[in-house]
Length: 238
Image 1 (cartoon, rainbow, N blue to C red):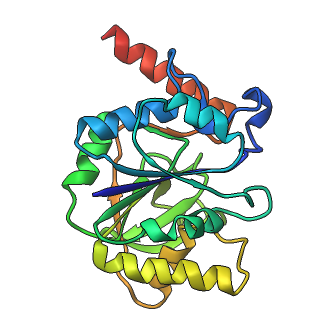
Image 2 (image 1 turned 90 degrees about the vertical axis):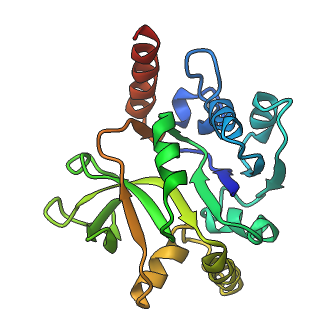
Image 3 (image 1 turned 30 degrees about the vertical axis):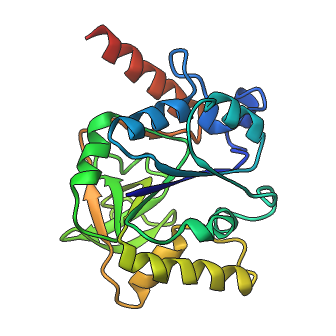
């Protein structure tokens, strides 16, 4: 299993709180978030890791001193969305099943264990307990993705997208080619997940794993960061 971590973005919605550091470097009880993530991966024998950096990458490499990982740099992090980050890492997209995740996602260990136990792919994580406050919204039926987007109403929303996908090695070839085609056609505004969503429109089954009841947060707003810190503090007190 290979792991690709997206960590190039500025994070404009929370950047003023982060002292010019990337979102994945927020301090969580004395440790950068990205370091916590790699430790979690390495404990499970997941050592084929690649990270795409961009904004203030020096902080990421400082946080991960001593770790082994492939490095890719996206110089266009201010003018293009995450499709460009995956494009720069396109040579990594082959050879094995893969997890792709946004670098600012925090999750408790059991979420990763559940994802690794899955055999279905392509598969996206979501949380059915988050609807009213959901950012990017999913609608799924029988664990199959049907609709997606920020514009979905609460009535249409089954849950919130978590920021992690599992792709099979067979699907990965299609995904890689779609990334290349998108950049070739100058579709710089799209996200890496759009390459998966577009296959739904063509009849491809995309599965959704509901992790309701498990803790996770993506550091988009200061409130997300505060939730992470509170969860870690409570966990250490148990």
